[in-house]
Image 1 (cartoon, rainbow, N blue to C red):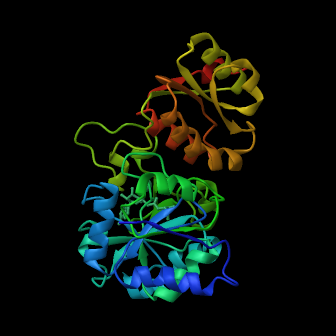
Image 2 (cartoon, rainbow, N blue to C red):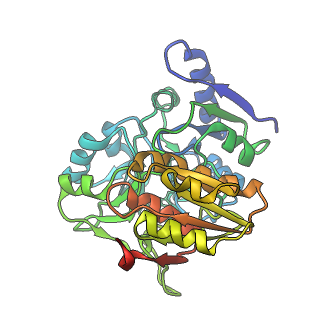
Amino acid sequence: MKTKLYRIPKVAGYEKEINEAADVIRQGGLLAIPTETVYGLGADALNEEAVRSIFEAKGRPSDNPLIIHVPGSEWLECYCRQVPQTAYDLAEAFWPGPLTMILSRDPIVPNRTTGGLDTVGVRCPAHPVTLAIIAAAGVPIAAPSANTSGRPSCTNAEDVLEDMNEKIPAIVDGGPCQVGVESTILDLTVTPPQLLRPGGIPLEALESVVGTITVDRAVTGLLKPGEQPKAPGMKYRHYAPHAKVTVLTGAGATTADYIRKHCSPQSGIICFEEYALLFEGMEVHLLGPERDKSEQARRVFDALRKFDHTKVTEIYAQCPDDSGLGLAIGNRLKKAAGFRIIDLGEKEI
Ligand code: TXA
Ligand code: MG
């Protein structure tokens, strides 16, 4: 199958392309869509056959549920039951944006979409082109990240093409993703709400609206054998480059120094840009300035994907602290490392 590429940088002037893209969804096809977080691999969430082909194209285990994308909170009552007021408060504060809410599922959402769960994840993405495509299609779009299962997520259309070329009918290129890590997933079917995956909306920002939030153990560490995360996707090996990854936590100067002492010519380095000079001549990917977590979020997947095109056999990564977007960036790096973490925190200066 030849994969068609639609370049749709904005809505105005691209109505014809938006309609064509929406037609792909309406006809039960797969369409890669841009969002502010990462690219998604979309299909009509209500069409079981279309949803089945998402799992096939990604090589995704069928028990891993998909989130559905809607154009606004007014669609919540169509696909969810017993929607609490908190959901509307959160939507008011953070939608369109990188927040996925887990709510009770209305049976109109097929089992195939939710992996048989009686809950459904719902999000309103902040990309005008994708919002226009959903509105034109008239159905929620189920979309996991557009990467092949297990690989780091795609934050631009070229990465999607690399993973999905000739597997799907079409890709919408809406430019590079502005946030760079996936949405924050918050389970609202429990009290207090529970964070299942850190993402583009920081935990602190959510707490300022809903108060205390508990954090699922799968967010911060490896689960014990037999222990199940609440977000089924958190149990799979994820975001992993081919080379083994080791994550260093602690003060930047300390972790950079550690890496410099332990790396070899075959090592790849992911570091804050302040320390780039220490690794001259090596395979280095910069995460951005040490204090600029927004930039680090935009670059983290790119850094992990790019090493797959090099000869490096191991990767050392500096990691931001857990505040703000740091929790999501650190989670992606640590998952890529299978939670192989060296904590130099106590040596902070
Ligand atoms: O930013 C994002 O959320 C991106 C863009 C494309 O919107 N999507 C995304 O989807 O990251 P995916 O499938 O790669 O990750 C969704 C995660 C998975 O770990 C899945 O297990 C979890 O959400 N999930 C989906 N539905 C769930 C549910 N009903 N209960 C618990 N976890 C759920
Ligand atoms: Mg994913």
